[in-house]
Image (cartoon, rainbow, N blue to C red; front, side):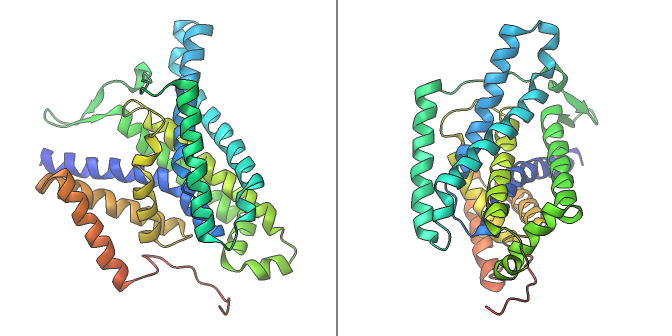
Length: 301
């Protein structure tokens, strides 16, 4: 029983990490149809912000305040990734709308440039971020089942982010404008919505969510300039499987991939498990090409 509960927890933990990484991509890809290959580098930005905030707390503040650094780093990662995403949309992405292949190549070049910039500033070797003391250890459910506080915190953080995004999309004027542009861009523009402004805000917000994901990933291991490249493929799989542009679809896609991946890796091996998950996704998309959840729209195209 304890082994089964542990496997379920591992699947939920992996699902939460995939969801936190993919949710920003779901917003930008679903709204603007931009293949943002630099999404992983916003994860890297968030991770390095956690590292910088940790260094600042260690040098400038007393040891008793060190436990608060991670909460502060989440806010710093969100703001910095938001600003960088806004600048990227302003300088490059807005000229790539309607050109998916060009946007793919351009953002891939941006990702390589950001990786090299990180190597120049922080060096090529990985760096470690020390978790605060209140995240050390685990919850002893039974004698054989211990749930790490770090992963429990990530699950709670993802749940909070999902709640905030839901409240913004469905209970705010900005969220209604975003959904209107996502469902029918031409009609939204005719009704006076500035689609360019919505695009910029959405891209920056999606980038900021990737920054929070990168900050959370520092709890699981060392970080380096290429940390984002390990997750970008999984993020795209979650978005495509869930259904482009739907929050509930992204949640379902991340949960399905995380649970199946954990179960198959346990019964087979890590490499074979990923291959089997990828095969199942391809087979499912042959049956439902639009993913688990699709957008209902009155557009005639």
